[in-house]
Image (cartoon, rainbow, N blue to C red):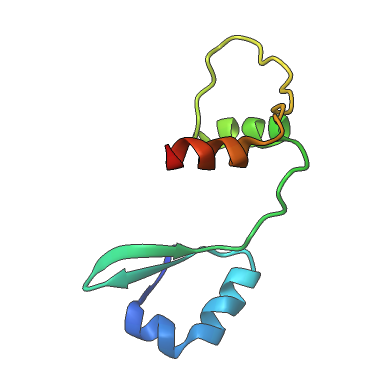
Length: 91
C-alpha cells in the first residue's frame, strides 16, 4: 500500500513520516495532487564499486553491456594539475 502525504501534511506530520520510513516504508509527498518527492530509508552503501554496480543492475537503474566487467583501476594523478590549469587560464 502506497503512503502519500500532501506537502502540507508531510510538514505537519514529519515525525510520523520519519517513523514510517524507519519501519522500512516509502512515503510519497505530493504537491497539488502530483507526486514530487519520495522519502525512503538510506541503505548502507556497498564497499566496492563493483558491488554497487551489480546492485544498480538488479534494480534496473543501469543496464550492463553484456560483456564481463573488467576490474576498475584507480585514476593516476599527475602532480601539479592545479598549477597547470591556473597557468593556462592566465594566458
